[in-house]
Length: 406
Image (cartoon, rainbow, N blue to C red; front, side):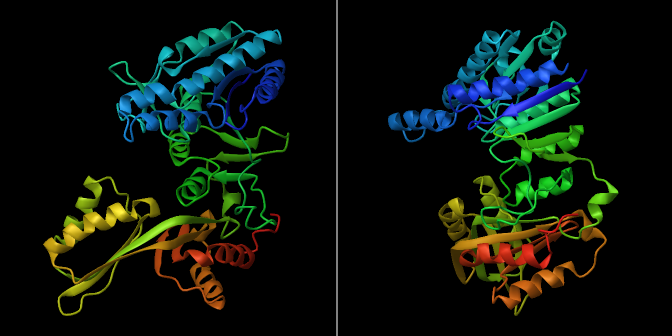
């Protein structure tokens, strides 16, 4: 008998007929002799509806009260799923995260899981019940309800699976696995049968929307085997697991693209110790996330520094940088919102040579100028103009022959 944790997202439970479909899937796995734990999101659109209601009252609602408000969406779903399963003749019991509890820190809206008490879950499983848990939410040490941020239900499911030492955590969504790139851009994109945690972590951080980065981090840390699959068909999904030798056969496994990038450049900034520290400390204190950073070589005691931020933070970043510019005495400050980041990812890049040159040559043949480059052992990212983003994805997917089966 295996312990299986399943997670269903908002589209999978978006209406009563879809909740009934989820119940049938869960019951089928239960009938195979498995202990079943189900983590669910709010019904599709519900969280946005609740947020919009609060913002009709005030543009900046209190963060604690917002977590109390938006966490109610998952409470509705767990009860409806439990009632559905009970109507089918199965034992089922639902829990809000605070009832377990699933403990978090006190960062309202973006809390991190610190611990989970699985005693109630284990007792219910031993009594033959299907346990249903509200995703996305937790409780801090003061007893306040917290939420884990968008995509938090994935993290909830992985945390529950880790706490139970589950045999498998299945993430059900509206796609049937992880693909070599976005099939909406490249229809020939190939579904990847298995992928290493490290590769998936890079993909999640670089624009792939199948799994959220914090869930992948948690799974990798606790070695929780994940399967990503669709709740609308029975197709085989993608296994996210520990690295194996087979995964290094291909130099590149996937191409990702993020079109929500912006670039800020300081020109003629004094090249003296502490300059970069002052600049990036000011951004960090204002919670502006900086990604790629490039500093040119110094000429006559001056240098240029460019870096990327999320496009939504460009105006905020420029305002902060304007204040820093006056302190540091930079000659010029510019910002551009029409940027994208295209990346190639693969464990095989550790042992295959010439990958970077093939990438750069492919982009050059299409007249795509590279403005910034960032690398790690298993990824290369290039910042380019946003208008070339989809072309770059198609070209790179083709040049590395990612449509071919293994």
